[in-house]
Image 1 (cartoon, rainbow, N blue to C red):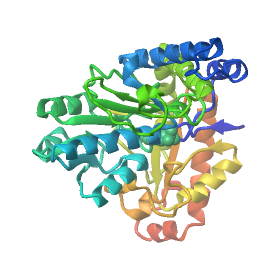
Image 2: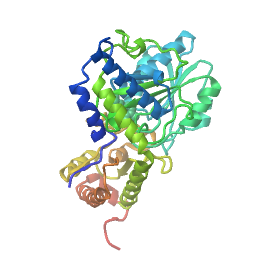
Image 3: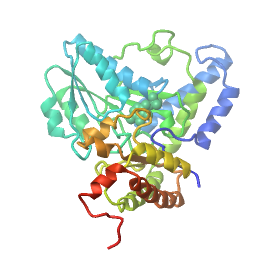
Image 4: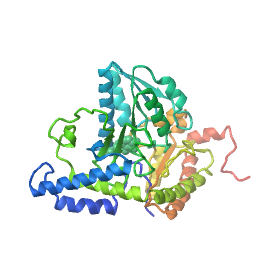
Length: 397
Ligand SMILES: *Cc1c(COP(=O)(O)O)cnc(C)c1O
């Protein structure tokens, strides 16, 4: 059996996304800036796509800026908010310890440039606390950036409440919503969001396209100098096929949101219940405020990497944490921020589902993972060491 359970890293393109992209690749080759009919044709399609994306977020089309990826949208939003803050003498930013590297590394660069960043702790459940946010806001705070859904453990932050605090204090609020848009309801008005990043390939659109939502009252400066594209703020001829495909994929995801969420949540809950039966295991992140598709576990006494290789041999594509940090031997910064000891954080497994997965696949995962974990433990010196201090959970009676 083959199971793709790494949808938080990237998703397969949907038929809808491909159907929107292929004719655009073949026929919509006009440059949207050209005045002739081929140009106008592409421009109208672009306008429709912008409107569709805006509608899914409860935004206005002019508040949507297409970008090359989610990372670019994060970089743009944070860099711009910092620049606007610095103009008013405000050089303090608030974020948290479990952000994606697109956010964390942008903040690191700003710190080198003289900004001060407060990283809110996330507690064992992976959630930021509103009272701690309130206490961290200062006169010179120019930006709060907190992700909507965490890509490693799936926790959903109290975005609406965080946004309300920021509104009350007059501080800009950006959220990296790459794992939220297309997965759970997102409404920039109701959620009090000023800026939001999204990425197509996390909801069945192709890689290499994303968007930044920026509230119309905010005067964004140009991010890429060039032509008049994206209201002059992000030059470069628009990636029409990718943008149309992303709009179609997002529209489809939003139309089927409730149905997909119910289906994915049922699979997720079965996975969590099954994996919890493995001795010395723990499920990471708050059980209640959790995205439908992300399951994160730690198994004591084993290495996440060996677990992944064995699962791969069994046909299961999973991840130890985020795709971006794999390849490095350091345990995930997210799991460490939950207060987890290094040796346990090493034995992590992330399974991320989408609406294309099936209960049969979940059953297969639940048949494979406990066996692989058991086998690896039998070869693990760390596990042997642990057995000196506890009864062997695999021994009967
Ligand atoms: C995938 C991801 C990104 C990066 O998006 P790209 O389009 O791959 O650049 C940013 N933030 C989060 C939370 C993500 O999961």
